[in-house]
Image (cartoon, rainbow, N blue to C red):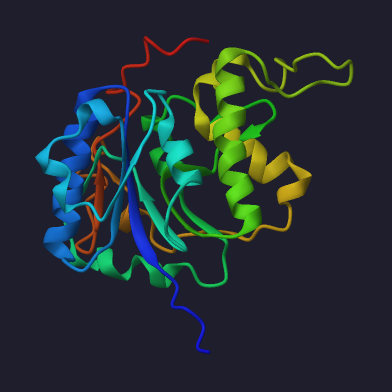
Length: 249
């Protein structure tokens, strides 16, 4: 018997505010415009759903958590998934070629480039430095990767609510190496799992060869940082535009 062919698809998540659903539908349309054969899963709060989601191949309902995207990533229906933040816009047909970048990696991310540090709210902290960006993620399904994605969500929920934080030698929350202000970022959870969690040490975490192709930030000065001609995804989000006032710390 021939082995079944691996499914490959895209994942978009819209929760908490209807604006994310608007953006998600725009991204859904864009992917289908450039790549009509694309398989797309939309993870969305049921209350937002309307006819604009008809192009989605799979629909999964989520709750209204601020970072339901992490839960959505853990529940992807595809064997190989390319997750994309809803607040991104697709502008190039190479979206169909992204799966070629997985190689032997379990997960592939874009990275934070030093010349772009000025647009991020947090990069360096006493215990380390953010390197990976969670705006897009290409990953293959496996038992360990599934656990990673679920931990990313579960630990972030506890991190945000104050029920989890790295401990110091005294068994106390280590706010000296890891200031509490980092708790707002699921990027900190990602950093911890990749760099500090022993059970994920065997995961092969790769980086896209061309960061700007897959995650070009719209806030960048276009004169100093011109958008490459083959840019696929433009990220409309930034520290300046995020409304984080309702995230409880």
